[in-house]
Image (cartoon, rainbow, N blue to C red; front, side, top):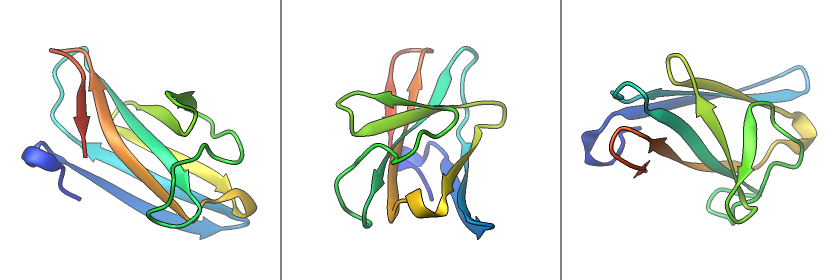
Length: 109
């Protein structure tokens, strides 16, 4: 999906196998040196629903803000894998990208 203001794109794939659901996310956004790039997200019971924290802790994520969102630092090639057990997999994920450093905070939808 293209990001607002043509600043790049984010791709994702969902894979179900062996009792788990994995979401592979990759961001393609040119970043200046020293900028940190986060996936800021919320789980949803159904697409378009209220944001919630994952039912089970997700490695590499940290709760953030009002207790309804979590975030993960995208590293290397701006990639992350979110792995849910099949029973705890949400009905949907909503997310934005957040960068810090290099001239301030930016939120990308």
